[in-house]
Length: 192
Image (cartoon, rainbow, N blue to C red; front, side, top):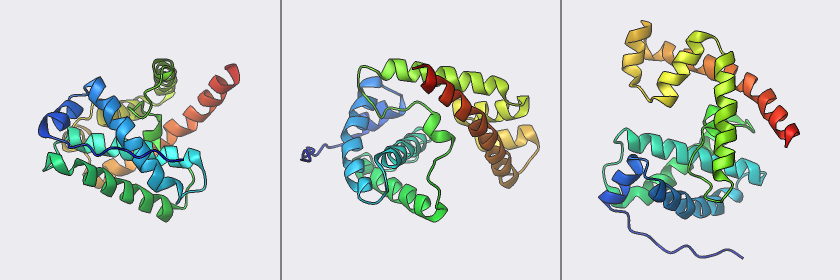
């Protein structure tokens, strides 16, 4: 039986706290939207794991956009999350893929249970190990763009490339990262 989620009014303070990585607000955001998004997504994808991945991807994109100052009206946060979810679903269908990219490996606010610190620590450890195994240029590129969220135009200037080629470099670095991460995950799962 599905539980009815109470409506919540989002104000500027809530969105600013979310942008500032306030843990309590992030937990509320994840708890509030997770259930709503799962209701929407579960009917459209083949498994609960895929649905969870798509919810995580939606959260990541929403938070990235918010941190970049990309929401014009705080009360429209719910509609914004819904539209991002629609785009994630469309990309999922278009790609025909059954997995997601690096974004699923970034610890996000999706879970609020007691195991979160352990899971987050384990993911951070895996990511740190894999980053050390990458080529220095790939490691630096992923660090600047995804971890430090540097402006991509600045990264382009530093590397002497245009935005189109930066996308190519990021794609290659993410692919190498995923290739190295999968064995680390299997080793970790086997040790548990």
